Amino acid sequence: MNEIGRELTETVGGDPDGVFLYVEIGEGWVDTSIFKDEGNVVRWYDPRKTNLADLLWEAWYLEPEGPNLR
Image (cartoon, rainbow, N blue to C red; front, side, top):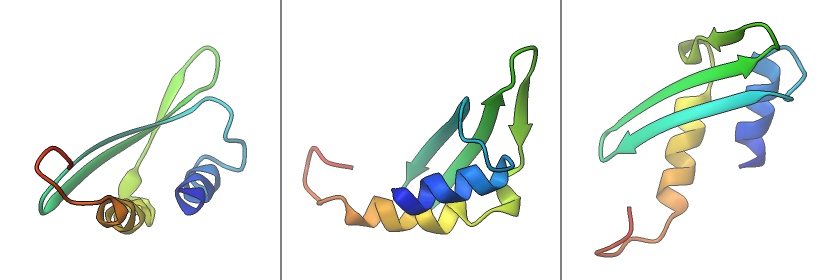
């Protein structure tokens, strides 16, 4: 999770205040959006220019499996 936070901070230019990560993930796919509230505007950042997908997959597979999990 810390690595995800670092990646987001680097992506938005060093200040994580106001950053919002939206993720949908399922077996075999992941979709992400990165937003940052900058006061007058909410800016979108392209997640394809990051390592987030790999980091999110790592986090996904850390979760225990079970009938009501994942």
